[in-house]
Length: 182
Image (cartoon, rainbow, N blue to C red; front, side):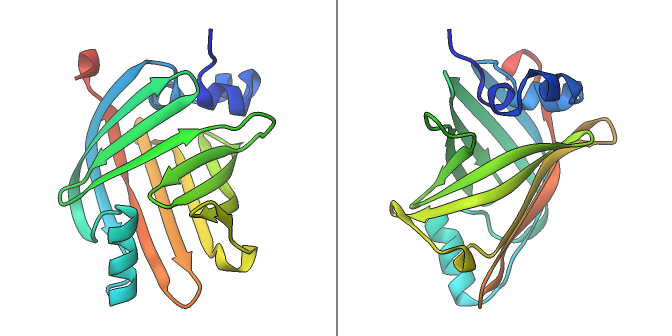
């Protein structure tokens, strides 16, 4: 029997301290459907727009409808996010012998240390590979990512800023699991 990705990486004691809304989103259900809203921001210059498109990231815009599907098989999770104007897909997994969560997004793979911060999970960027090649830390930029609870429901916040480019993407909002997985 496999262990769910987030509970395994965080450890049982930490996992049990998280609110039910966070546990529901990051738990072990084989399939999860959720809907909500997100505000998306990002630099409007051509290089940022091009990089967002390459990575499958959404375009900036306020109050975008958001649908999320998470499909879990063992420790591997396929996240499909449907923003108002773009479908963003990533694969989350772990590697044997590593305490990091790895998220593959197009040609990029990000390695995160997951830490509990109160009622939230703080995702701390520790590694970045593009096309399998590690990038120096100076090129990682700043990635702030957090998933927790606000106003009784699951809330997320992501902000990615790259050297010379500025804000590649910033999105925040809320999600609620749909009844009966639909």
